[in-house]
Image 1 (spheres, rainbow, N blue to C red):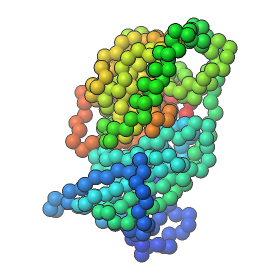
Image 2 (cartoon, rainbow, N blue to C red):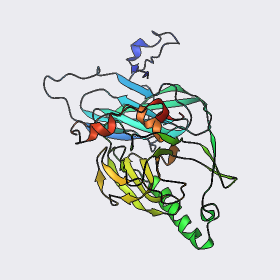
Image 3 (cartoon, rainbow, N blue to C red):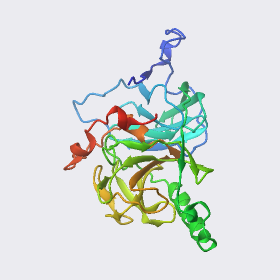
Image 4 (cartoon, helix red, strand yellow):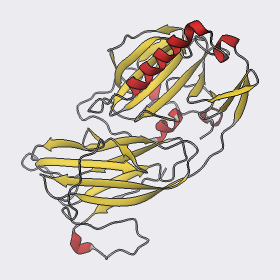
Length: 351
């Protein structure tokens, strides 16, 4: 996988690069500041200790995104490395009109955004930064989003799940509002530490975005990734975070939602057992439950979902991203086993 590197250099370099080059030259205070938006973040940076060296020259900002050419319905990661030194740094980002919430992880600013499903083509990435209240610098790039084809499947489930009885409609509405409001919450800092891992190292049985025909009637899209598993086998959390929901839901069965910070959540459905409670803090790779067949299912499996800014995305796409590590965090016991296994071709599923 290729990562794009952009160095924002002093204004004296303007015009030195050909139009086709992947570099943009700007001064640190060229553009007047704009109103604060949801994507804005700030941090007070202590001056480096005597003898320490800055990772980048004082007037350089590095902006990268990956993957370079993503497909619709997946996650796009934006990483910003700002100049070293004291003072307050502010950064904000936007992709195709959607805020990319940026937060510190270790030495970098990091943000995740969900690319809309079934929408391909060029999308504008806007990154702005300022230091110590100075004028803001804003730069624009184009991210090419490739289309993909989604499959269709026929499923047979109990009639109560395609035409719910009247006595559960209030419950369904209440649970939908609970999930909607939870996914709309934004923890003001990243809780993650390092790359995301698979909850189970098993094959994908149903990919993200698959069209679902229940009992002969097209009713939904599959907004998660189904991973094979027998009842009672372990389910691990994909990343460090806090348990936001751990309860039985009508369609999802025993379900867990994990808040990873900055508006990013993962979900784990149809569990036979939940080994955590709401409010618990969990480490990447920790066992949080067991595979089951609760809720609307045709058999035991794990339904794994991911969300950014309240929008669904292909959970399997986060496994391809480089996530910065918190500087003070130590690897957790058993973490390597959960995160190092490489899925085979049959396990990758549809991207």
